[in-house]
Image (tube, rainbow, N blue to C red; front, side):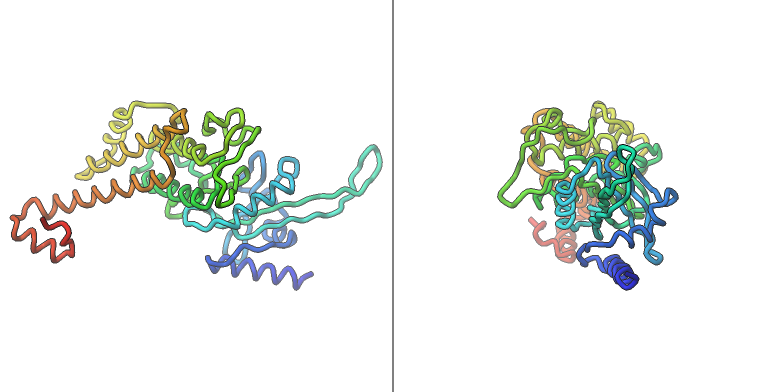
Amino acid sequence: MERKASTARSDLEEILADETAEPKALPLSLLQDITGDFSDDQQIGSGGFAVVYKGMIGNRAVAVKRLSNALMDETEFHREVQCLMRVKHKNVVRFLGYCADRQGSMEEFDKKLVMADVHERLLCFEYIPKGSLDKYIMDASREWGTCYKIIKGICEGLQYLHENHIVHLDLKPANILLDDNMAPKITDFGLSRCFDENQSRDITKTILGTMGYLAPEHREGGVIAHSADLYSLGVIIIEILTGQKGYQATDDVIESWSDRLEGSQRDTLCKQIRVCYETALECRDFDPKKRPTSALTIVDRLHEMETIQVYQQFANLYIAPFNSVSLQITLRFLGWNHLIC
């Protein structure tokens, strides 16, 4: 038993050290050990489906998610593990391992002691130190550069999930964690749907998601499609920009940010804010067909905006002051021959 526990600890240490390593099955004894037997002192979060504990492996921290037996059956657990095994992206929380354990326990029933099965289902993830996005949204001192980085990272993470045939279905600030560099990482795949390559949607009769972020077409069940996540994304972007879910006029949002921006980049940053806010409103359209066609469409829109802004900055710094001859020499020196006309 000790040898097995030692091997499992070594396995987890190796997974932490090697980002290319695959998640593994982990024994319950190891997860109990690193969390102080699921001590209240190690608890770092809780929700309707699970309690999350901080665990220590040497000097490295991990997050151990202990799932509720009452709200998640074996089929749902297997589905979540299968989804998690498929994802590896800088904007998705890294999955390290899982545990499915069944033990006998004497319980009192009808004034008699009976043997009952106790199921333990646990998931192990990288530990993300800054907590969830919902706390940052309420920070009045948040800076636009960080906000834009978070928005872009969420979009890229969502693009990755959708390209791998995964619909999250519960995207919200509480399910987006921030690392030391304020990079966002999507987490909590408890309601997710993983599709085959030839399958793009499914039907549910169950309300999936969190009210306020839940797409209108899912409020009474319905077709599961990528557009539901895009609706949630729109609500999140609006919250990042305004600190609240409700609609505000675009010009009012830009003006509120403009007062906080300084320097020569103000106009450029205000254009970024406009693009992000208008995209969010498009995502939040009641009609799924009027939302962006995909997360990739949004990512491409952000990249295109960045490219135009870089070129404009270059033009302002180098092109405008130059005559045509010196301009051509400069462009050739920079390797930008395609800009010579």
